[in-house]
Image (cartoon, rainbow, N blue to C red; front, side):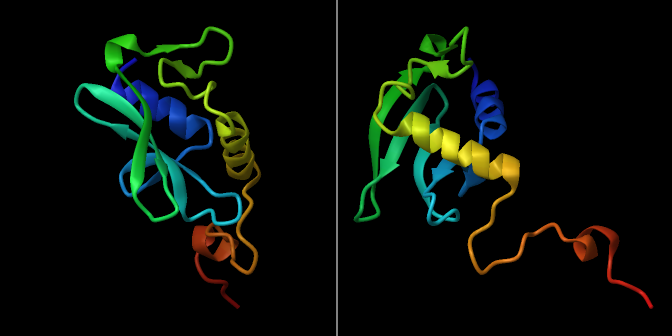
Length: 121
């Protein structure tokens, strides 16, 4: 897979672009990334944010070693299905993206006024 193919797969499966990286967010804080795909020139790395705020690489592979799983489509070689909790986190993020859930106390970004303009009387 190429960098573009991995990015396309990630965005179609609930990942969001945050700070230039396809990222998975905390269920309780959708604006805070806790997992990201650091897609470099020759390698793709899966990084997890430690409590202190530093990113730690947990898996990585060169693009030639990354192939989509025939059943699920998940890029193999990055350990996304092998690392405990990633499958659930990916599903939670995908569900949130599909159903348009927003954090409590905030308004959805796409309102009728933002789509059609202000209401005229």
